Image (cartoon, rainbow, N blue to C red; front, top):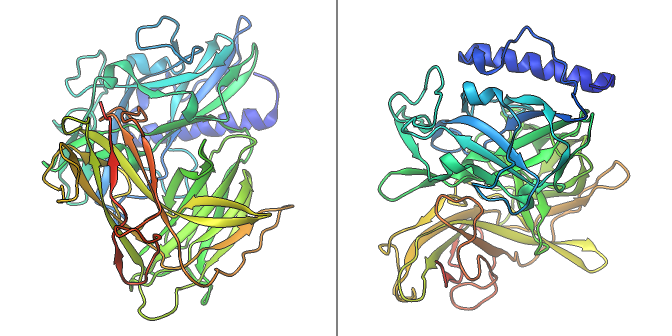
Length: 493
């Protein structure tokens, strides 16, 4: 390793943190020794890599029904080919310690302001190259893949499970990807492929978005639809933090839920959520670690304990390493008061038969960036079925649904007001007052192959609707329910 003190100190801190974490959870053997050297000096012209994992959950109780989500990781691998399949030679182990001692991790165990959930391991002799795919291998429920963790919190429900707030434990069903790997393809490696040069030290972080990865079927079965991203992270502070406050009282918003999303544009030009978390009781939030040299849109929204909604507030173009300070959210005014509700229907067909798909849904508002530029930004939904929707039955179909379809309803609870927007510039940001008048929204739905994460499955895998069910522009109305135009996925295999 080079003598850069920031790298040395960061690795020492992470190594100490990992040892402390493992000691608490009884998984002390996942690293060779917590008392060993922290040096990851590369050898023989190769590079070195350290792998961590994060999950800033927004659906943990009391913001959702989950108390814990356990996954057991037995391998993290990378490949230099963007087209390598499960059987292609050349997959490199990034954390070989896991091969002999898998690690069971509670994805909800870290505090809302913690930077890391866990260290997965390291490899000081990684061949130099540009790595375009990453995959995580989990221990399957049968435990048939090799070594097992010393203990399992799933208590007879396999090695991957969810624990609900009522204490019940449910197995988290996996697809064959438990054996072949939960893929992080090139499009989900933020900032592009991971390049490892001879003698170089790399810090790689994997964000396992548990809230977007769990499908609850109508029969009560819990399935995994893996939603993961990866990124090379900086050795200095690249996080984005702040505190969401009530604009009138300058105090944290009491009760209810305050959500904060970190977003980036996708190929369509609209924002998608990179990470999302719930602010803590003091209004604080912290996204870290983050990719180097990346900027994000930060979106904060809240409904307090009395059911009062607040204007969404959006900070545009925020670089890593920024503390936004106080983000003041104004309570919505007017009569009747209360948030808007969008209640719609998704359908899926092959054309001749009903299709089974997984889907996600999000509500977006347009914002002006000046100079005629308009961007659609996701407004996090409160208490809603935004992710993890399973279309595997026709029982929810309405008379308007196309023939030969499976159907599923969705509900999005959103601010009934336009957002307050500020553009980050020269280290400063000021927020403009929300625009008056109509409150336009659009709904975006994405379709995926069941249990296959980001694998698309339909002819048009991403659909936007901007109209309601009777053909009018889609708008939010306070304390009212609006039915968006039905979203029909066709040509689904």
